[in-house]
Image (cartoon, rainbow, N blue to C red):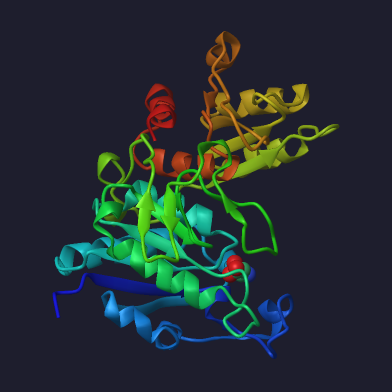
Length: 334
Ligand code: ASP
């Protein structure tokens, strides 16, 4: 047999690893189900050994609501270590709950120190469910990670036969399998049933090896909060963040980053006290653009990043600089 590609599969938990009380339980399993180790998930898809040499381990076993800034550096370090210490590894697959997958994906997209593919996957239906997507998504993610054409595209999410960029992807539906979308940006390609992994595009924004973020040096990430604007919202929540002395704040404005006048005044006070504030939008698409008054006031604009993605870039940016111009440039580059 010709040498098979080597894929390291790292488990972190989520629905893809969950066994519910019965085959029709598609909604209560987060409260009543139990999680299986990655070895058991892989044992359900023996076909995978025809296409890759698979090495596996569980890094953690959590619902994705328990995975965040406290875990991201550890996950990134583990991925970097795999590429550093196992040079024959062609790609890494990371299983993860779908709830915060897009956030872990963007953190890794900015911190993995290799052009080799990292493909995240999960499931919308527990592994025990009638019509589960757990097995096929895991199989397909391994196919994508083993594919030479996946190199250099940053961290990706492969779900439901589609491949998305970790920068642009988000979960858009709480229940259905066709949930991961890239809004205006579109998907990268397919992991198709005819055995083909097909790519149509790459993100042109910098990622992985092209960023200055060294996760090996990051201890605790700076705290960055998000406050959303809505009709009738006021300064209450911005004031809470200001008093907390968080390192940064993302304001998810209505439309082009605009918020309520009292909240904006409180945000300006926070900027004067040293907080870094990024204006994002609660709309799913399009850019928040710089204006002379936002510039004068000291705000940074998020470009087209969703507020929770802008938070991740700001956290990482603050590990290397507090310079507003330098951070703004990162929002244009990454
Ligand atoms: N509650 C789960 C999680 O995010 C949902 C999923 O895995 O799809 O971990």
